[in-house]
Image (cartoon, rainbow, N blue to C red; front, side, top):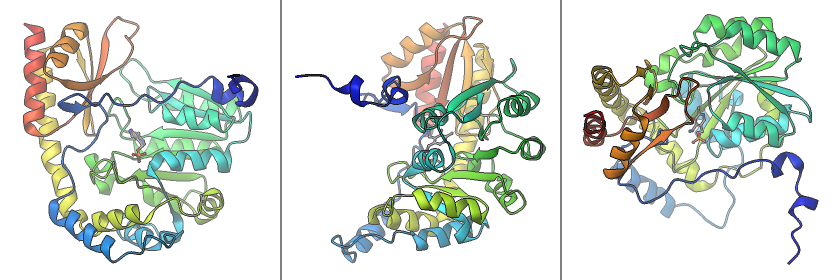
Length: 357
Ligand code: PMP
């Protein structure tokens, strides 16, 4: 059969690597910053009851009004300043479709979440990464200068940052907003692990060029439900809503998201447990003296070590999946370790202890 891909596929798509799926056969999955705690049974039951009362032959509410009302109550940003997506992944795709024209420059700070580049490139944009310094502090001047020199259309900032766990202080975000005329997209996927009160979402009422992206996948533990959202000035949200596919949030997602948001106190109480575990694991990693361990405000810990091969081997032997990245310039192996349930974290610490013997 003739291969039409070269003839038919847009060049910017042809050069992309396919998204990696998680190998399913690990016992302890700590590679994707998921929440180890499932939706409580009582809430699953409430969901099933609502599903029984729902028509599957009729389309869902295209505006997801009930979900947006709950998000407004949660975030303090008005419902008509919120657009929802099938995960924040779909929000990024919509940002590409709404704002990025072929050749437009999009900026991120490195290292950060790879999907910013992928969605921007699919939209036809040109992505430039501005490296953090050696301690993974963001190079604010570098971001601003690169934006100005390239007339950047959009800047992605991630706080807490995936994978390093560091924060973008409020004054840095404001400096970037004020000194560039790019659209600044602040990704707060992990903000609840810092504290919901530390979100900069309310700044969208003061800056016409700010969008804040959030998700129910992490602190709410609803990664399988697929609900992300974007908060912003109403004129920008209205533009994004034009490209949104009409029924992007199906009825199952809308109902599960609604139940999650209505029970947010109960779900977010688990963040306290995870943060206590984060502290315990962080202290243990420091005590191991295994290399560079970075402070984190998220539900994962980033570290770089010369003992990467031994640690990977010990993790594999215990069927633990963690995220690793290519070696640093100094030959260290970077790891991003998601905080799991206490017994999962114990298994990780045992594996590392064994590897370092
Ligand atoms: N932003 C960041 C920084 C992430 O790490 C992730 C998930 N890994 C996402 C966004 C996407 O989350 P989701 O599509 O599940 O909402």
